Image (tube, one colour):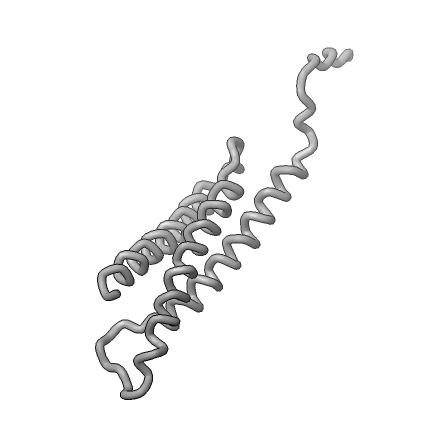
Length: 119
């Protein structure tokens, strides 16, 4: 039995780049979730303000603004890394990642809009 000769083309047997891309995308997505959760827990929704602490509100608003923008940028980078052209055949993982990214992006956009309305 003789094996046919391999055609000349790109060597795609090394899948290390794809795995590294998925690993870095996962790490960046985890960092994005941590940054988002930190800002989400600090969100000052509500009108009750303790007397004498009004000076803190602009600082918190600036932090939340920068955090929302950072979350959007990190989510974009993680989405780009986690969705390469060739995907493994596990669509549930793609849907889960897309759902997490959607929650992060939509809540960050809401945070930016809300901050611009109250300030």
